[in-house]
Length: 161
Image 1 (cartoon, rainbow, N blue to C red):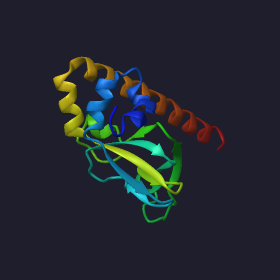
Image 2: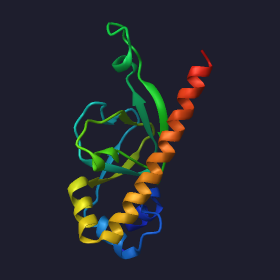
Image 3: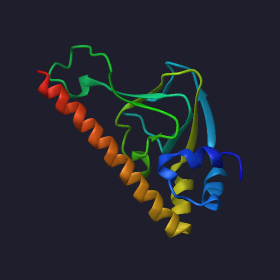
Image 4: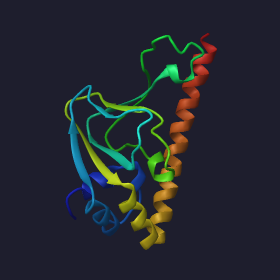
């Protein structure tokens, strides 16, 4: 096993991957460390990276002014999720060329993130269709869980009004 293989093994999106596959992914991982309050990326930014939390926590925040009918009003960001070790975020960058849909901010010190570049990961998916299928299936399951969680928060908010 190499560098980041053990961290990748704990990641939800690499569930049931072989050590060989994880070693290949580990070979192009980068690591960054953030302190509490540091922004990983902002809503509306361009990016082509997927992040996996190796240590710490990351908050996912939305800017309500983007959907407000009162554009002059200043809103505080709304926390929609707190992600922990083994969870991933930024996966939409693997699927499209769009802008970031939320802001990601470290909420603990230190927060260590493994960073996977889209081109490297998709190249591996093309080289090994079995790997690609399993990764896309796991990403779809992870995104479905996040959508359901967000849907519940929206329903709770609407019902509390």
